Image (cartoon, rainbow, N blue to C red; front, side):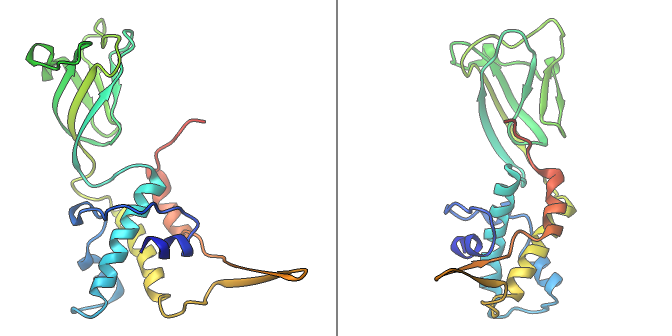
Length: 212
């Protein structure tokens, strides 16, 4: 499936183990309903493969994961800030938060839940006391939390269904969208397809912004 997606769309899909079904952004039931397929057929396995691949592609395009899962992260404190940004937002729940320059992360270094504020949607942990900061150290802050969506945003599921619909309906039209351009005595064949613009429109608000 990754080679098919790499060929059809201008996005690099890195070969990897498929996402667990619980981490996919859309279900087989939903995509079959979208396609008007009312019963099991020989395409179920193909559709399931498309769901795995498109779920992976969406996460790579947006540079983040979506389905809720548990994470343990280590961050470095600078000694001047009491604010921590986790990698996978929104935050569903924080299991534990430690600050320990020796990195033993024992019970004496556990920060009580009443000592910090969680801004879940933004993925931000902020120490409650303005005078308190995380210690300066290398990977001295350890946080275990659940991040992502327990209920997938409709826009993400819809983007996946539109994208899968487009690939599914083109599977028997392999030369559609292929252009051959002659330059001198050389002929170059390429595909003009890209991620469908309506898919990009739905996903862009969820993309992780990067600096530089």
